[in-house]
Length: 274
Image (cartoon, rainbow, N blue to C red):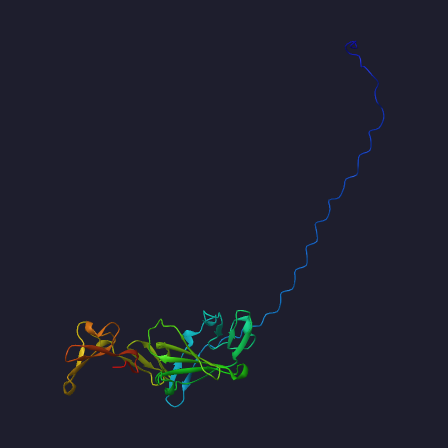
């Protein structure tokens, strides 16, 4: 039966409560793995601020500094996968080349042969058949006497690129780059723009912009040879027959126009073969 209201049924349990487990400390975080040391790297030499040379015989400067890049110039044989890597006025950046190397040849296996350990400049040799205005950059001191000759020829468009020209039996790679950057300027002066020049030594500025014409060309008649020469100052020729970006052209008696050259510096015209 249910107990009467107000009465407690059963006995009061006076036993102490069971002991509780002591608090546990959380486990410590795992010890991080030690960071492997960074392998040492070969310091990259600071490239010179000026890349070029002054011709002592002619007092002319070839300044190639604008062609310097933080990466290597790379030429690849698509058939074999062999690449030629070189730095312009600095050491090659490719790790496979090794330290203090200006030019090297790398096989797909990673094997490398050094083609240059230094560099020097000289006047472009006419014997190369590339003309006489320009500079040759020679990277020498390679394995077994190997070397790289990079010929910078005055002329060509502003956005031109170097072209691999082959290898000699003596183990010298040849590269040709026709660029206006290779056109010499007088030592002590600098070209301000296409038709002005400032001589810093004599503090003289020469400016031919007032001679520019946008409507007609200047004409020189060569009557004995039945031809005319059309030219302009600070501008391409206006006569459409001469073609684009031509500063002087020859027009025969039959009206056939042939480009003679274009202005690449204030020092003169670069000839085209007639």
